[in-house]
Length: 170
Image (cartoon, rainbow, N blue to C red; front, side, top):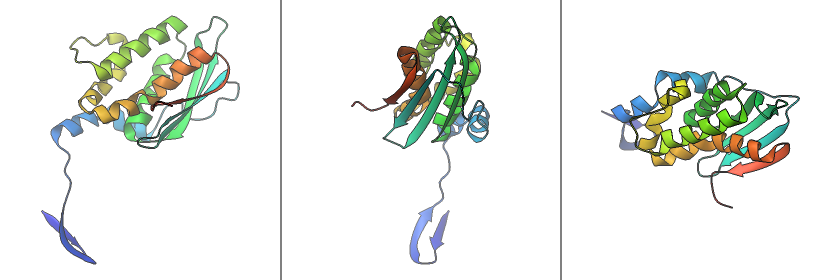
């Protein structure tokens, strides 16, 4: 199937998504990228982290409010990027809000393993985040999926104030 542009008579093939890519962009991912949850400003944030992926242009601005015990009382994000980065941030904020520091650290490790390692045993505690497992088939997309998670990891380390994190080495 080919189509010619009016000014260009060379044939152009329509692009059809192969089954692997269709699997990757499941309905949950598309829903969260189109209508991200916890998107916006958090006026009383304890820490703000700007995350970027220079390889593809994804940007995340993560705002975290810690409770008295150091857990994530509230978390929001803003920014722009591909469907994977936006859906990952949206799903992450839903899962981490109200969690203890230890739970957040454990989920961070579990999510990283989910998108980087071949495993058949995915933790049920990740819930809807398990749809991101298909990202590991596309190594260039792992950075997209991990951007918000790198930002929350930096927020835990930072504790307060502002920070920047990148998917690329300095």
